[in-house]
Amino acid sequence: MLIQKQKKSKKGNKRKLKRSQILLIGSFLVFAGVITLSYGRLQVLREMIYESVRLALFVEDTKVEKTNNTEEIPQEVTNTETKSEVKPKIKYNYIGYLEIPKIGLKRGFVDPSSRYNNIQYNITISDKSNMPDVDYGNFILYAHSGDAYISFFAYLYKLNEGDYAYVTYNGEKYSYELVKIENVPKIGTLEVKRPNKNTKELTLITCTKDSDTEQTVYYFDIR
Image (cartoon, rainbow, N blue to C red; front, side, top):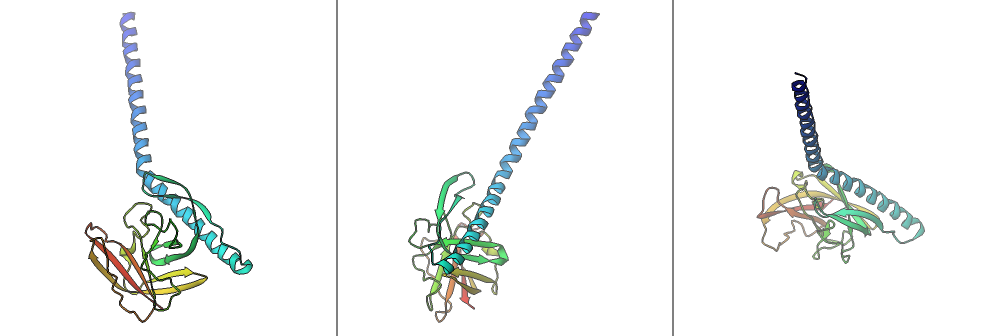
C-alpha cells in the first residue's frame, strides 16, 4: 500500500514538473512573439527620437552660424534602412529640412552632392531640382512610402489641396500650398508637369499607397 502511494506521488510530481515546463516554454514563446511584433514599432519610435534630436541640433547650429560665422557641425546619428537591418552611425550634414505639420513630418535633407542624398538614407533632392532660393525654380524631393524606417513620405496620401508644407534653407523658411495631386504610372522615369512656371514650386514624389504600378506627385506653390 505504501509503495503504491509512493508511485502515485512520483507520477504526480512528474505531471507537475511537466506542466511547469510546458507553462515555462509557452510563456517564453508568447514573450518572444510580443517582442517580435513590437520590435518594428520600437525601432520607429527610436528613429523618431533621433530625428528630433538631429533637427534640434540643426536649428541650434544654424543660429550659431549666423552669430559666429562658423561651419555647421555634422551630427552623428543611427539610421536604419529596413525593419531588420540597422545601419552603422552616419554623419549627416543637413543643409535644411522639410516640414509638413498635418502629417507630423519634419525631416532634414543633405547637400545634393552628398552620398547621403540617396533614397536609402534620406529625403532626396532630385538632380533635376532647383534649390528653394532660385527664382521660379522647382524644389523636387522624393522618398519612399510604406512602413520601413526610410519611408519618410509614408503619410503624404493624407494630404489634400490647400494643405501646407514648409522648407527651411539658408536661414529662410519658405511656405508652400498644395495645389495639385497626380497619380502617374511607375515606368522608371517621370515627367514633372509644373502647374505654374511663374512662381517658385515644391514637388514631392513617392509611391502611391496600396499600388505597385503607380507613383503620386504632389505639387505645391509658394505662398
